Amino acid sequence: MVKEALAEAEHKMKSAITALEENLATIRTGRASPVLVERLLVEYYGSPTQLQQLATITVPEPRQLLIKPFDQASLKNIERAIQASELGLTPTNDGKVIRLNLPPLTEERRRDLVRVVHHRAEEARASIRNIRRHTHDDLREFEKEKLISEDELKRAEADLQKLTDRYIGKVDELSQRKEAEIREI
Image (cartoon, rainbow, N blue to C red; front, side, top):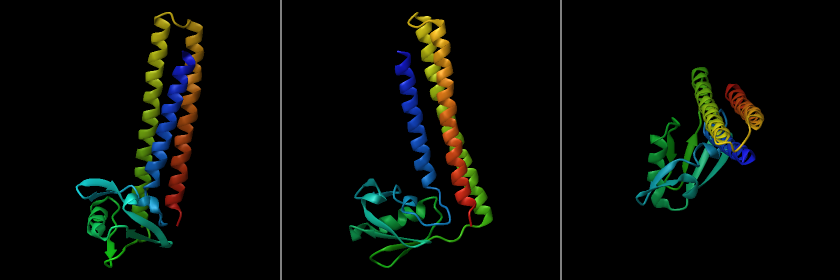
């Protein structure tokens, strides 16, 4: 019972880390990466669809993305979605493909992006702490219902705290790595 509760908590914490990794991947650094736009939602025949399902995204140059839609009719919608996004990029449309030129980051923009990274990392930490709190409540409930002893509760709490510390450490590591990537010129 305790093992199942801890295993479920670990699974949820892993999910929080995965979500953070995906979230941080969308933050623009100095280099072009298809990850920046592949999850962008584009209005396609009345339904929002991820860009990666509508087009091929390549990196012909270090600071440029090339988006080649499978259906030429979606070109304008892709262009609109990019302009409406928070990327701050202006697409260039030649009728067949869309080019996105990534300008070098200014120092002020780098600071803003670092703040965004810190904010998203704090959200992940809060998520992990919430998972710990819910699991801790479950463990206390087990003890209250006499399903586990007080000693088992103490051991489980210690294991839960170790698990929490390990995943918060992973969040810190991911955020520091992304921050270094942003500050790199």
